[in-house]
Length: 74
Length: 397
Ligand code: HEM
Ligand code: HEM
Ligand code: SF4
Ligand code: SF4
Image (tube, rainbow over all chains, first blue to last red; front, side, top):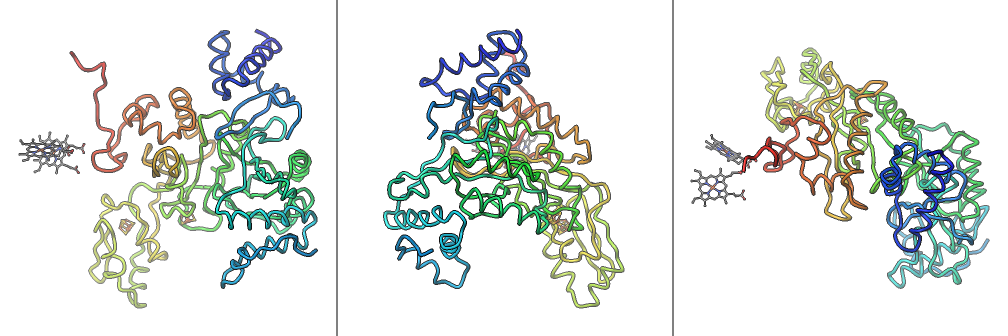
């Protein structure tokens, strides 16, 4: 799977999960690598690009999670 | 600028003989570049003292772009009354190994914080980082950009590797059994990703102490405590021992009798140590620094698992590797760390520290999965030991 596709898969996974279950970085790495047969390090590299570009952000609620940024930041 | 809020309760805390944080916050309220932070901080704190309840909320957005650590979000739950602290985020800045600064470096940090924040700092937090207290969300990126342009980076927070820290080590101390500063620096560089982009079930702290005195309190405060030690015999200079005796030190009473393992003898002329029984308490070395030195073959004991009580009670680190050479490039050490993280990643529940995970699954399971051999030095306390040599599969039913 190429990186752009992988980024889409990750983004959609986070999007689907919003409001239901907060995902940790390791949840995403484990799930995407198991479901799509890609190495965790590749998932991590794709995820890093999503975070660096600001499409996804880290949040903190007793632990660190990955989420889609709110439209209006507080 | 005059103070905005009356603070009769806080004022009491200025009356004692000791330095007062209230005095410093008042000074910031009167003179800081952005005085609104400290002004309303005083007001909100006074309210909390009166109502005996905190008015801070935390969490939410915690980073600058790409980072999930280094900023701790803080918000007031009464922002209408105290708009100056509606946001009051903390920035953690990675401190230099051993906490050495030039005055220039400190001035730079302070100037940046006067510009973007409250002007209040906390040197250093219990993690070690330089703590810059109080700024708003819209200032975060600019403060970070300014800090990084001067060579500073953010430290760890949340479910990340926390900024590794160490004692002053060989820079200032003759007892250092390895270079704690180099080990801290190399560990920080090796695990940049884990430091800035939280990926664990919970926090993970490294602390490096050069010898068993453990000035950085690693045994109680670090998930991984790396404590300097030696193999073989304590080096004794008998002439210097006799010098101590002739200049009035009662070696029997003040050294030999206080050895916790009773492994020393003194006949008035010669000091003998049964090194096999020495538990590295450091008492004799500290009492007679000119006469006694750690043994020549030096390295560190690696311990794992300490934490303060949150989910379960407080834990102290316990031995997982009795002796490891701690020399660049530290490959053996880094590989061990990575195997431990894999085990944690595989089995750890959310918010479960590595020590708690080991308590839950058992030390023998941990040793087997991480590939460590049981060793007598791992016995933590009677009846908590790793010596179960059989596994479920070994038992014929
Ligand atoms: C009917 C007789 C006995 C019963 C029911 C009994 C029961 C027990 C139990 C339940 C324990 C575990 C205690 C614990 O650590 O929580 C124990 C430990 C022990 N017992 Fe006995 N015991 C008996 C006789 C003896 C005798 C006669 C001796 C020695 C002469 C002895 C020596 C020990 C020792 C040394 C331990 C500690 C073992 C360890 O630390 O794991 N016991 N016993
Ligand atoms: C073949 C002979 C023996 C065997 C197989 C044996 C086995 C054991 C085992 C497995 C333990 C538990 C260790 C632990 O998990 O902490 C133990 C503890 C103990 N044993 Fe023995 N034992 C033997 C003989 C003796 C004798 C002869 C004595 C005393 C005269 C003795 C006194 C004790 C004591 C006091 C403890 C408790 C130690 C502690 O909890 O700190 N044992 N023994
Ligand atoms: S822990 Fe040991 S080596 Fe480090 S400063 Fe303290 S006494 Fe010196
Ligand atoms: S270091 Fe402590 S245990 Fe070791 S010989 Fe000296 S006093 Fe005894």
